[in-house]
Length: 157
Image (cartoon, rainbow, N blue to C red; front, top):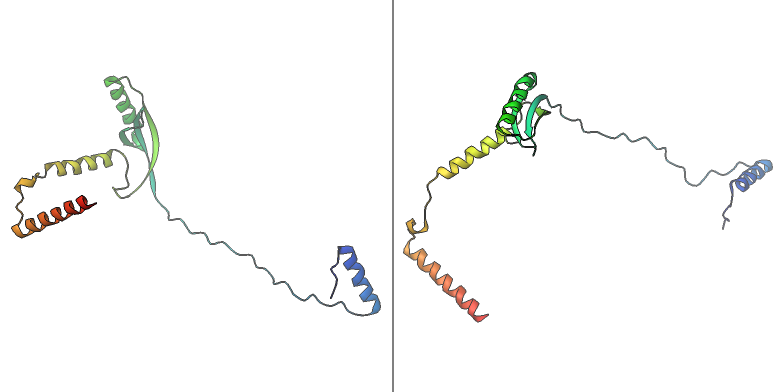
């Protein structure tokens, strides 16, 4: 069994001794595979068009109004109107929004208006009370039997 070499210098001495005897050094048992640099695939991001708008906020970051980028003066007028109504803090902040985005993803006044409209539609629906609903007799009898069975089961426990 071959002994383990302890240093690089000793390996060099052994190699020189083999060459001096006229023999060729033996090739290592395992040849290392040539490593190729792996290229990372990066997912290309879809190009999303955005536009810059001015958003008027109050002190608690509630949106008070939205204005196109070229209408900053109108946004400042809105701030002055709001300050005249109340002495609260109002400010303007530029926001980038996606052009042509789904209305469901839009956050702000438009989304709040949509939610208010849908809740108004729900409120307009007629309310049906339990007393107004007629249940066929066979279904009503089955329901009563099930209730009695449940009560008996609870009493047994």
